[in-house]
Image (tube, rainbow, N blue to C red; front, side, top):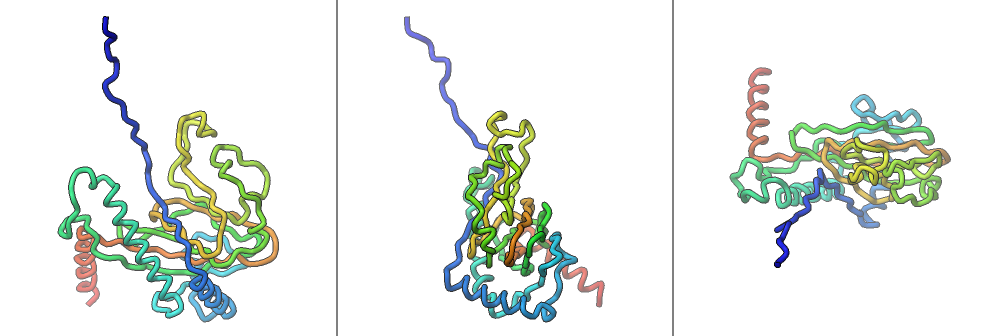
Length: 262
């Protein structure tokens, strides 16, 4: 007698929420940014203090706005704009619209343009830190990023630690001093993702000079304090992604507000 079949088909569907880009600047570009940020920090009063707009608990270092028209950051702005364009186009290819329809130039969610919203410099000394927070953009669809410019030797010497902390095994050591935590979700069921059949919802990233991390504006992140000499220097930015739908709404609102102020 022939055995009957019990299952005709089985598929696995991952519940993945988001992606972040990790971009390595050229040595030449990094060197230019090192020189520029050193000059800025040597005369901080020449730049607008951005502290009141940011979450950082930076008491010894500085948080300074960098005008987007500054010639020394022209190359960086170009890299970020190109990366943001690629990020959104990749999302269109893999996101919810990919399976049901094409996105032509007239589609409401077709990319209309990329706009840098703001850019700033952070300098951290021992004890300075950034509590967990997220960024905002003028556009409903937006990206945020940070760029590692300078890393003190005390952070460079921290031992490599393959995100064991993400599995609920954080111990009282200095493995994550000066590191950034990216968090895109929460592990609700257990302290250990292995016990709950969950994927890791966060990652500690060790700062590496010249590295850019680009992610959706809602992604929570923090910067741990460190101990020791030296200064940890980063830049950060928010990027507006304008689609046909939101660009038209924004323009309409801007026109109404402009008429009211006249």
